[in-house]
Amino acid sequence: MSEKIIKKPFFIFNPKSYLYGQELYDLVEVAEKLAREYEEKISILVTGPFADLSNMVKITEKVKISAQHMDGIELGRGMGYITAESLANIGVKATFLNHAEHQQTLSELSKSIKRSKENNISTIVCADSLEEAKAIAKLDPEVILCEPSELIGTGKVSDESYIKKTNTAIREVNEEILVMQAAGISTADDVYRTISLGADGTGCTSGIVKAENPKQMLKDMIEACVKAYEERQ
Ligand SMILES: O=C(CO)COP(=O)(O)O
Image (tube, rainbow, N blue to C red; front, side):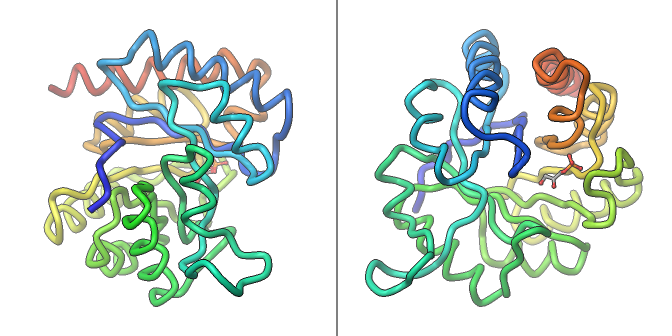
């Protein structure tokens, strides 16, 4: 069993392929400062391109660094694949799986989740619909990210009924799974609303990388996550 490294509430900054190198590390350092300041109050994760992960791990202590994808193969043949061992070896603590921009079949997902657990890597598995979320919940990932693909990058967020329905459906299958709600999160108010509606965590890509001041937006979103969760308790 993998040791759980993600606690409620959590916030994931997921710069995808928008950023790399120093521009990315500058934001990772902002996230690290906040993770130290709010250590008891929030888990903060940042994903990165594979080539940047090792450098990101070196400049962080409290922020958990996540891969954007991981394959379920064993060590051996597998040209161009990413193994759990290679990520764990450099200190990566989590991985996204089945993102709308890097989809996997249920059978591939099941293998990736198994290999992640064998290597103490937390899994954040994306689901595009209520039905997909229920099917993925049976595979026992650490986090399910409910993220309707059509909202990604639009600045439009899931409606209240979708958030509540998916939160409940996942917890009915397995109450240990953490529920993340995202896609279209573009302001600190979006973060506050999502957590207030019962999500364990949320996150953002374009709302931060395209903001006038990405560092400030990252800070505002993380603080909104802490505030909403405290008020919910
Ligand atoms: O795909 C996403 C994270 O998994 C979200 O993307 P946006 O924040 O740009 O909508």
